[in-house]
Every structure is written in C-alpha cells, then in structure tokens.
Image (cartoon, rainbow, N blue to C red; front, side, top):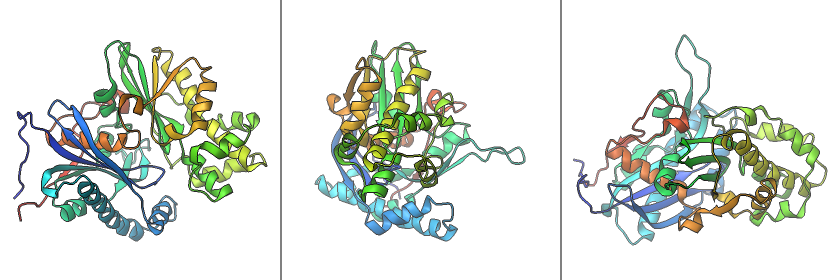
Length: 391
C-alpha cells in the first residue's frame, strides 16, 4: 500500500530528492529540496556521486552506434542501482531516513535523443531514451520515484527539451527583468525570461562535450580544469569560422541537440582540419562554445528582446576560459552573472529542476513549457512508480 504523504492544501514542506546525469557523464548530481505547494523551495543538500570508471566507460560505449540491445538492457537496470545508491547517499548525508523523503525525481541518463525524425507509415519516429530504471530506484529505496519526463513532451509533438525552463521560471522569472538563464553542461542551452515575450528556450550547441573530448584525447584528462589548457593556447580563427558553419547553429528555435550530432565521430571529423598545437585546439573548441552561444543570442534572442542579465549555470560556469570568451564576444556589454549570485547552486541546479518537475507530476500539474519545447500544449510529464514503504 502506497502511503500518500502529501496534503495538497498543507503548507508543510516535504522532502524531494532530485537525480540527474547529463551529457558529460561526470556522475550523478543528487540533491534534496524542501518544497511547498506554491513551488517555493529550499536546497537542503547536494552532492555529486561519481560513476566508477568501468561504468562510465560502459555508458560512453552506449553512445556508439554498435552498442548491442543486450548491453542497453542490462545497463538500464544497472544504472537504476547506481541512481538508487546516489539517492541513499544523499539521504544519509542529510541525516535523514528514507521514510522522511516523499518523492524521488530522476532524469536518468540520456542515451539517445531523436526529436525530429521522419514519419514512417504516417506515424512519428521522434523519440528519446533515458535509462536508469526507475522501478529499481523505487524498489531499492522504497520511495515513490518519478522518471521518464521527456517522452510525454515528444509524444505531444515537442522536442522533449529543454525541460529545465519550468524550473527557470520558478527560480528566475521576475517582473521587468530580462534574463537569459544560460546552462553550459555537455550541451549549452538557454531559457529566455522577459516581459517582452513568452518564455522560450533552446539548445545553443556544444557546451563541454567537445572540450572534454579533445582534452581527453590530447592531454589524457577528463576535463579542462579551470580552463587552464584553453587559456594557455591561442584561438585559430580560421578553424573557428569553419566550425561555425555547422548547419545546426542556423536552425531556428525551438530546437534541441546532443551527442547524436556532436559525437565522437563528429569530433574526429573536425579534428582533421585542427591546428597542430594541442593547446590551440582546446582554446579554439572552448571559443566555439562561447561564440555559438553569442551567435544564438544575436540570431534568435536579441531580435525579440534585450537582455539585462546572462545567468550562467552548469559546469561551464566554472570555466574561466568560457567566461573570458563570452565577455569578449559580447564586447563586455552584457552583464554576466552565475547562479551562485542568486544563492542557487550551479552544481545542483538541474537536479533541483527534476525534483521540482517530480513534485509537479505527483500533483498532476502541467510541467512542460510548450513555447520552449514546441509541444502542442501543456502536459504532465513523467511516470510515477509507487514506493514500498508500507511493508
């Protein structure tokens, strides 16, 4: 029997766990928030639970076209175990017990995202796949788990992304303020909050995904810590301008992208025309992340609204080279802040977002933003897996 811990009319806050693993596969971002029915919330605690090396390698193996169905099937359940471990870890770190937690919201690990596929027999093939089996999470923790948020939006003819704009409106929307909430994870995406226009969002292009690839390939490091490699090199403007010819950058929003485009094969192809100096390669690829963001603002945001503040989040917010290039390409005319300036953790913002999405789902509250995803209307996203506390 499922214990319903919620009283929709109650002002008593409830604890919700948020779990997220992004395109960079750095690990599982885990958080606990206290949430109220008006969606006001407080971050109780956050942490990153790193994947073991062999599991991270297996996940990257699934990104390759030759991954087998059996590998995918097994990893779905195996990652469910790791997401459950992450939930248990963050609950214990907070000094709480499973019985104290009302919900877990798990994004899972995106393996494939294909929101714009051609029809077959007049049926849509547009699809997305996030693994990390929520039934395993619910079974191991005993806590009601909500997952698979993206599929309903795609079923409603949306892109299934970006979904964090639901949380961005809660956290950052303010009357008379024109803000661009810029996340730089594996992929960079922006949410535009302005009284001039309806909220809209889209993926700008590669965030850290290509930077991480070349940092690993050329220097044997997982990522460019503090942008040190990029800052030691020089931008090859000829190569950069060639990279900016990527057709995705000119596609009008709503739009989304991922490793399906900016893949290992993509990186290997563009490397053929890269400069010889390894530091210059990383510098130029880092500049590409910043320049593609600036270009997307010029093409798709500034024609609709001015921006008073650009608010950075995600791993890229900790990369001084990206921030340097953003200031350079915006001619130092745009005020660049971080989530931290508003007391919001850049490390756990997306985990917080999926905790809030789960909270809405449980109460049957529509939690997509069609102006951001392109869906035909508002929908309740996510699948609810009841917990088993009452044993």
